[in-house]
Length: 333
Image (cartoon, rainbow, N blue to C red; front, side):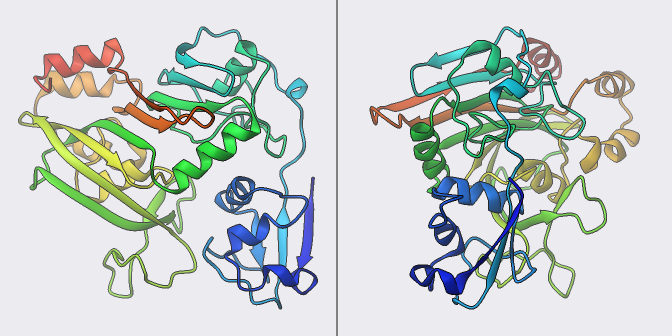
């Protein structure tokens, strides 16, 4: 596909609707989950500007959509990788992703991703716009290990995407942070957007006084509301093992919130770990952290409702063995 303009005056039935719902009225989009995918990828412009999903259609705008390039599974090269599959049926797959594996092809990673491995595993994956993300309902970073759900058909994809939207999916992460948060329990809230000068990272939107904007109803043109609940599980003199329960699932959410709390994730070069490492006096711990192949973030629990049977599904996976050795050695578990 390519860019296509939709004058809203030609679609009177969408006047007054939220942008994400209005997009689903277009034949080229069809479903709410596809609309949300386009908005998530910032492929939708209203009169030349990005708007939030909640933007209400006035009936006088022109909506410009930059559709993903159409591909087929034949354009993606299967990757013969043994996957740790916890559950699979005709509708979905629950997989324990290893750290170091990119979820889907993109700039700099055109093959040997989880998607390529899934194509070697099964011929049934939802295709959405036939872009390079078949089956992918949600993502975790390359370095993050742990649980992902993959859709095998459009029915499952639509139902699972709705669960994520309605915040009914249970997601628990664990992370090793520098230092120890002052409060053992807490909630971090902010609007996340791409950093204004460092485009590969994200940051919380700040108000005119330089403080992070915590009001969910603040009228902002950019940024997505993000909420992370945390609990300190254990700690030593230098590090903490912290549980995060996500209310929303924004890109780099835990990484940003941890860093802005003053406690970046250990090994997270993009969000402040290196500065903490440079001040560490414990030589042995400093050397071990310097040699870590990734930052220490793990998607430990995933719970959802089966899209067809409506059964409640709950899964849990422990940290990879190498990380468990580190956690045990430094008395974090």
